Length: 144
Image 1 (spheres, rainbow, N blue to C red):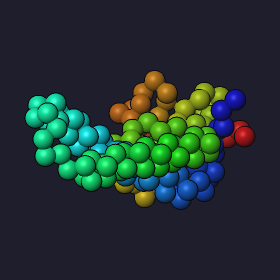
Image 2 (image 1 turned 180 degrees about the horizontal axis):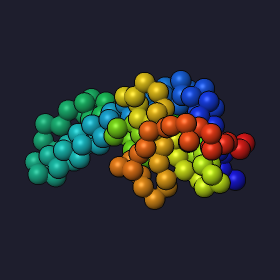
Image 3 (image 1 turned 135 degrees about the horizontal axis):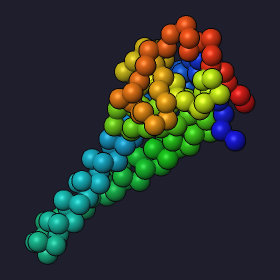
Image 4 (image 1 turned 30 degrees about the vertical axis):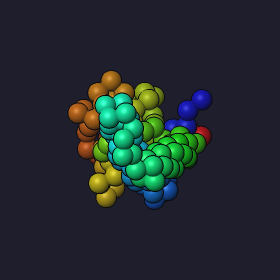
């Protein structure tokens, strides 16, 4: 059974979620960079037959790739263990499940935002975000 957050519970979790999503985004960036470099090196080796390959640099890219993959995995696991859903690793977008009038919806937060100020229905996604208002506050609830 998923965890459902109240707005207050989601806001209380925000510092830990923010740290973990920032780590995940940063790790993904380093992972993608290393993956691209390894691909480029592999293509170069295939084209030139391995002539003039800087093995130290290749090993450094492989280490960055492995380290970043592990850090990304750990950060994602921490977020998921809290009951939060990662929606976009490029922008650091996460959703906190909640109930609004008995319907599962999401409190929506992106890592460049100072607070959780929006929610949306599952079918609407980020583009359907609505500002949290009194009606929402009076009619939402969490369940652990």
